[in-house]
Length: 101
Image (cartoon, rainbow, N blue to C red; front, side, top):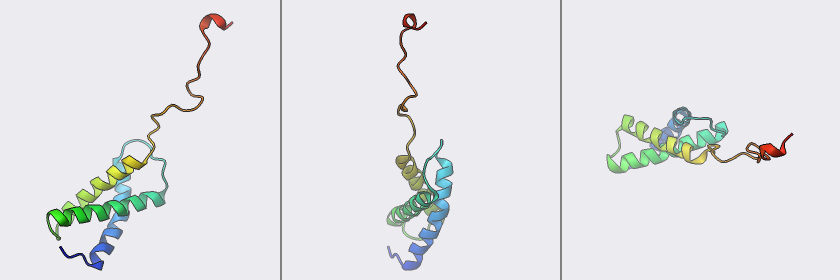
């Protein structure tokens, strides 16, 4: 496996596209900036490229793109706050009905 600078630059540029597509794949609202989305896309593209090159060897562009997209979607899903926790003040404890007039 030989990684050259040009291959890494291609993964970086592809990572910008992958970040946007991965954000569309993850359901729900993500409260993250565009910069963080691009950064996660670049990391996903690099990890996907390295994983694919280690398993299959270089030269599998479509499989590398799909693996990088899956990795980036998993990273976005892991880094976003889903909002499953209770919000402050949303579930107020109410007094019993017989105490209310």
